[in-house]
Length: 181
Image (cartoon, rainbow, N blue to C red; front, side):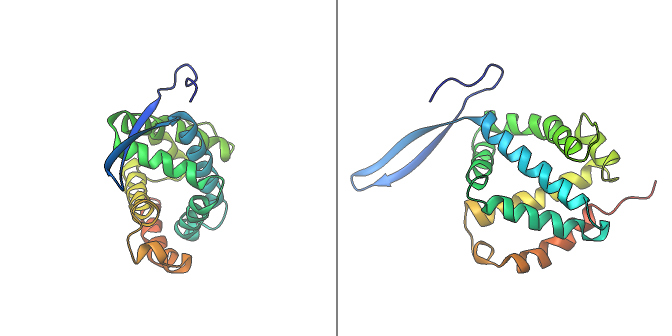
């Protein structure tokens, strides 16, 4: 692969697998910035779509939009790679952490026609919840994505969208219910 654009770190993930003659390790180069950009666009679009309807349906719309994004043949592989890199290396985790605290809020704000610079501002200004609530919702979503698409653990891996929406939608909704001032 060619060099990453200036300012973007190249992430290298080691992928181990067995072949007929024993164990072999292959190093796969991942363009971390490209994967995060695809993830960012998908999440920003999902957030904007989720915020565009009735507030009481936000959790279900967000989960539904994310499921569609991760199952899309164009965006799915890129966003899953961003997840894999983030959980498999310190460099990937650092890049995802930085990206989630600054780039994701900026993209979300742009998708909604607003200007925000960080996660705290985004959660309080755009969705009127404390940042910890947004982190709790993200933890639920990351768990779902890892179990369903990366580890492929049953029954989550084969559950219908409707089953997942009815299970995760209310949980995410609770995190995104505005907290009185």
